[in-house]
Amino acid sequence: MQQWHVVDMEYINNKPQRHVVYTNVVSNLNKMQNGIIYSVLKFVFDNLKYLSIVELFKFLFVKFFADRNDVLSRVKYSRLAVDIFIILKWTLVIVLLKWSINNSFLTFLVWYLII
Image 1 (cartoon, rainbow, N blue to C red):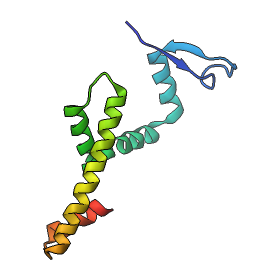
Image 2 (spheres, helix red, strand yellow; image 1 turned 90 degrees about the vertical axis):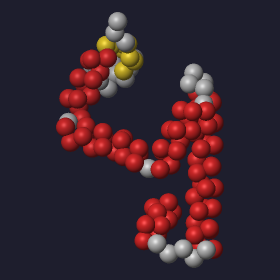
Image 3 (cartoon, rainbow, N blue to C red; image 1 turned 60 degrees about the vertical axis):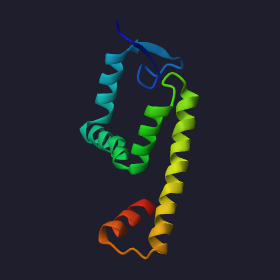
Image 4 (cartoon, one colour; image 1 turned 180 degrees about the horizontal axis):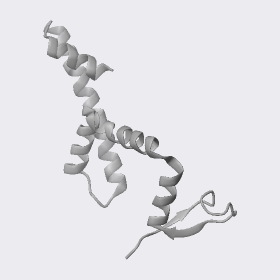
C-alpha cells in the first residue's frame, strides 16, 4: 500500500492548486531539485543534533515518560527535560566553582555545557 502526499504546484506545472502524488514521485522530484551536496549536508546537519547531551536527555525523557500517541505529552516532557537539564547543568557549574575543582576534563565539560 502506497502513501499519498500533497505537493505544492511548484513541483508540477505551476498550477495554482495542489495535487496528490505518490511518495516515490515526491522523492524523485526532491532528488532532482536539490543535488547530492545539499542532500549530504542536510543529512549531516539533521543528525548532528543527536551529538548534543540536551537532545539525548530529551530523547530519553520522552521515551520513558511520555505517551507515544499523545503529541502534547511528548512536547510537555521534552520541555520538562530541557528545563531539568538546564537546572542540573548550572548546579554542576556552581558546585565545581564552589569547591574549586580544577580538572582538564571538567573544564572541557563545563565549556561544552555553557556553549
